[in-house]
Length: 196
Image (cartoon, rainbow, N blue to C red; front, side, top):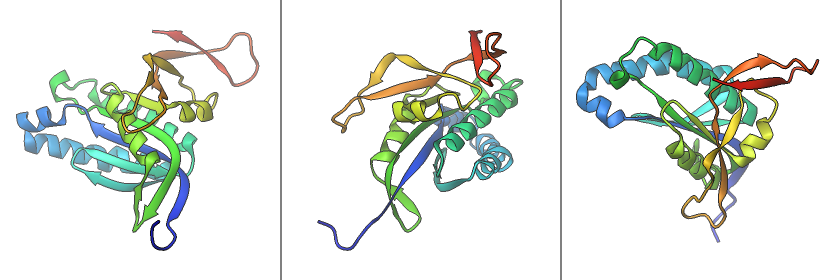
């Protein structure tokens, strides 16, 4: 049993890192660092603040962000992904900065501004499972954001992902690459999706 009482809270945790960062740094350290700093300054920090997130820590190419709302975390991730796709449009494939993002909602321990616990660990593991430029969310996040965003997520071919160190398998969902179309059969703000 630990001394004293720890601070706990439920939070949405977004973990992100740059896919292929070591390769990018090996090819051009200064250029990669300048490009990454520009992305953080011009896009990342702005979007995180806009969606009421708090940057917990950054380490090189990775970022850990806490949100009070899972919808805010997912909206932030989707908007960053969209803007990064636009930024990368004219950049050669081998020089693109593409984030892999994982989002989980869970109980965390807060100490001296840092966060710990299963909620944070699962977000980091989901980030590692995301495709470059992709977003991977837990089943809990998927259930909570259903119908609240203009994009959808689909279960990956693996369906469930066993996260080592955890007794139960976690459902894993990836953002699907779909084109948004108005739904012809509904007056509500729901939408149908068509594969592109």
